[in-house]
Length: 217
Picture 1 (tube, rainbow, N blue to C red):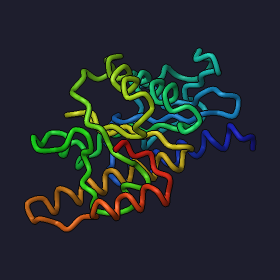
Picture 2 (picture 1 turned 45 degrees about the vertical axis):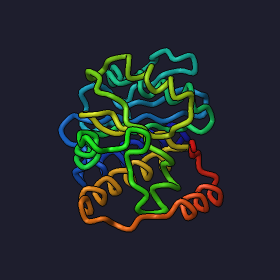
Picture 3 (picture 1 turned 180 degrees about the horizontal axis):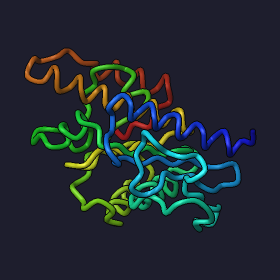
Picture 4 (picture 1 turned 45 degrees about the horizontal axis):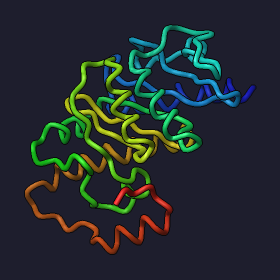
């Protein structure tokens, strides 16, 4: 099996796992990954994470031209913006409509500069600071422009009333970071109003420095 064939299978396998665990439903969510030649494999528009076909993934060449597969997700501006601004740090991008993250995006006291409270070291390690972006109509190219305006300083954003978008160095890292984002959002909602004891500033700094986390102080 070729490297690209393995990547196609991995995309569909991760997507199916995400769907089966209820992290995104129906035909929501999209996923992409870099190929060895600098191109992209992307989930098609209107497709369900539970039934992606490896042979029908949208295939882009290194110049950004669709060369094979079904038409891609309408959220391509989001994916392209992360690949453009994050460079080698972006080998894959995942976008979900996961319930707890979306709920957190709608609460008026959510910090727009860092939507996740520092409850665990793992959210900091895998995500850094997560920026809350305003609401955009699904598929609006302005979403991509909003990500570009961050100039590669964030690996994850949360779209208000829509869902999270995470870039990782490879497919596995992006999926695990997305899962960490949703679990931390769930923790934040579960402990809301209970004055949970999170990490101190010193503990956060230690994690950031030890694991070389992108952390925009």
